[in-house]
Length: 208
Image 1 (tube, rainbow, N blue to C red):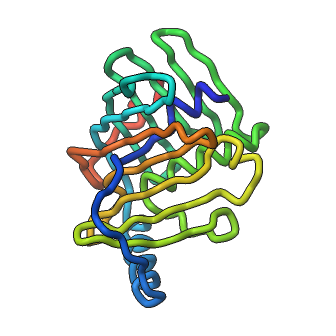
Image 2 (image 1 turned 135 degrees about the horizontal axis):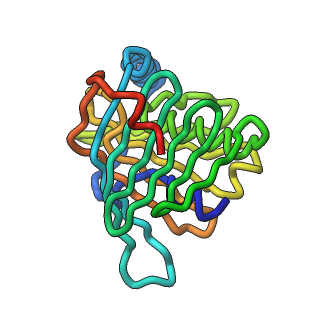
Image 3 (image 1 turned 135 degrees about the vertical axis):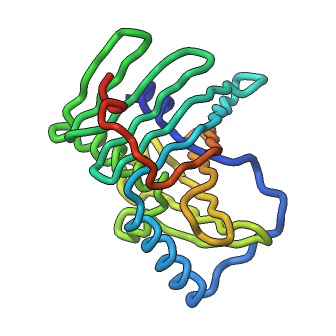
């Protein structure tokens, strides 16, 4: 579980040095409506990503690069290309893993923790994570970004994730960068680039 989480901890940005201020209630409402509208219109998304994993006992972060594929019919693929090849696919209520030719499958219908992680990952990418039943949510802004901070309420998820930070550009169009912090304060950063929204993505992409 911990290994899978580390590999799909999709997320982040380096420490922000700009002064942050909280959004007002009116600004929060406007922002939520904008992001919800954008996520509902999202049929597919492809992007390159750079992931850096910061571990306390290592002097340098572990850096990986790869491709992301997302479709609105609950299909999601993380394909790590460097330094090693590794692919993770969520589809049909299952998690598929291909570790350099070694394949495994987890049935999400019978594993609620993985099912929550699946929803967490998809929601993190699209930004559609404004469920205050699941998270304690705070909203901030600086000159160029809106930052959403989410702290899981459920103990089973909080065992793996201390908090998540989502970074949006000022237009609120999908997540630009994310940060996932673990309970021991190790964290994973992911930056998305070369995003293509609603371009054609063949279903064969999600077959390992």
